[in-house]
Length: 549
Image 1 (cartoon, helix red, strand yellow):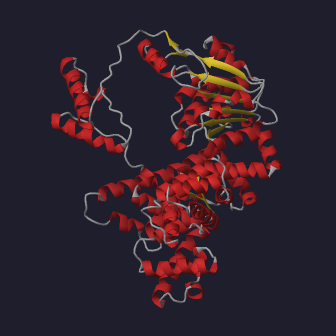
Image 2 (cartoon, one colour; image 1 turned 180 degrees about the vertical axis):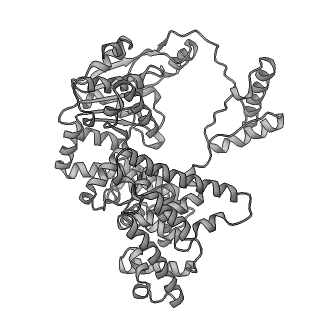
Image 3 (cartoon, one colour; image 1 turned 90 degrees about the vertical axis):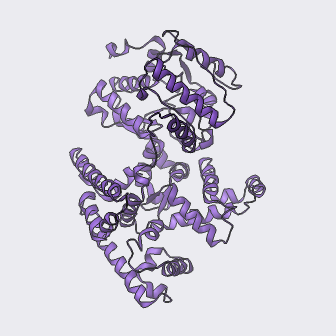
């Protein structure tokens, strides 16, 4: 281990070797933050700590995978594989699966993505006969999400006069009612959204001290990356887990906090030393990534922050080119300046087009740059776009999988009950939904016996509904005996999904086919990897859905 530590600078090494209590590591940009985290975990292991007693919370799953790979290079894959590493959501999701009953859920609960949540909120707004131009589902959902990230339950929201006053000013006084109904519908559907994973974990630990104690004893040492981007709920959960031993290391930079619009609370990092009275502060101030001019410019800007943890970031790299600031008076002028500079550098300094990148804040801003680049005849490529799992054909397949894993998933059921078309029209579906509300039953229960709960549905439609129920039930019965790849192929082929997706002579048909083939390939890879890891009990559809989410 000494050989590894000798490669660190003095500040990095000091941060790695301190393991006796709470510590805050302020890491300037390019200062080797990830290196410190990985070496610290390796150091803990070298001091005899079990890998399963270490919990590392990262900002993205990609960061967790990369960090685990780097740790495996330091200590070997056998130890690294047992580390608990992942995002807050992925780690707490595993805990909620195990402890679901304590918070009124079943362990096979569905995870709603943003589109599922918007669809549910939209349905509630329609049922309440509210104006969806005023109560826009995305805006309402944003307020509900902010409430959850601040640990405000529906009952607390309804009784908070300040929140009610804010909603009145926004001309949306019924948001509290929508939130309450939304929470009830999610519970009935045995579903959670992403914000619920934090809210429910906090409620679980707060209301069940014995559960909190169990995980506090399991996670002997906790590390949190990008601490400046944590929200109030995340900070409260970590506090509950560490209030007894304070063996926690948080790493971040208050000057790099950019996610306030998503609920990030800068006070978490600024007030860390007040919360953990005996904590130690370590500063990583040498930037290994940037030139001196870039670091100097950043320091000048950061100097104006009114609240900050003082540090002096420096670089020993070359001075580098000076920064050029161009002020444009319109979006068109901005695009022209950028395109002209690209053309100049390409023609005069022979910089290849592939050596340029244009960064913009929103996808909509790409149009004006595209127009100008096309006008000048400059080749370009747009990166990003729609996520693979957000494509319609993939979401349709996923909806079938979700219903098989959790028949109470109402949003999935509504999406596929008549897709591919099987003669169950919107009027019949509305009658089923109305019956579910009338009897306070889940929609799947009504679908299982439409003549009992919704006699107003025509006899022909009722037969088709029962036929739909029966075919889904066959997959539910096979769910825990057949792996995700084998069962997934059956679902895609037998329900008519493949024929529907592959049909049509439009230009996108080939893309849809390739996407489905890629999805099926992913199913096979998922099952194969689980078996290679000796996790044969995790090859089923519910676990695949968890990884997709």
